[in-house]
Image (tube, one colour):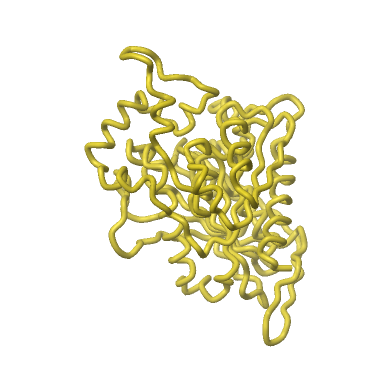
Length: 379
């Protein structure tokens, strides 16, 4: 996918907001509330693994409740002259809604080879519900820059991106004072679902993946066991073993700590959509997860099938719940495609007959808001 851009088209409506005196308590926001959006380039302090990415910074997109006079515009991804995906509706750089302070924040993690803006459908919905939502481009594994072997193979490092974003947002001059640091959530799609499980305390055994996906003998095709061997888009860069050998030359330190904990205690609840690579996370670490976990999967997902991922996670996480959406496939959780997008990316843009992607997004966003409201004890 080409570099994302923002485009325009007009919408309008009103927002109602209120605040209690002394100790502000958020109230439910009108479904037609205005949404603002902005971007951040985050430069984490200290050493970190950039996974071969040229840019040594984290690009992020932020959605937030805006003033009721904000004039939203439709947002798109793709070339200006031929956009490929819709990316919600928001007003870039809109003033923050008055009287709204100490709001929960949800950090969003995209799938392998995706982008922050691919989470726009959920980010804008969360902002309409009174949340601050921020999505990050994972280095070496996003659509806005070349993929790298390290970016697609060192999955566990993605959790550090999210933790660095939390650090930056809590210190941000514009948003830091508006975030309730005791009410932080994480939501992810596909490999992003794996990422948020890591933040909750899941730990990885990479040998499980490579043992399963290693060809039986040289020259054989990689195993296609319910498509799990394709989940990380390693197949775009050669065989799993080839990519691993390349990564071993540059990333011994990261590989050595792949089984470690990337838990972030600031993340109080996680929501995973079509989570991938669940089967690589160790039962003991999943048993130890204490935070509430919710998952939503499609019954027709052949890329991250539930029996290898969400079902496995639910069986081992005490506080987990799982919802299955009939007829929904893996890519239904991507942004809604334009007509051009359907032509260019039929694999990512074509849903099963009878599946309305926008309606599924509205349903899943409602699930997420209800879950976060209850789990974070916000309202």
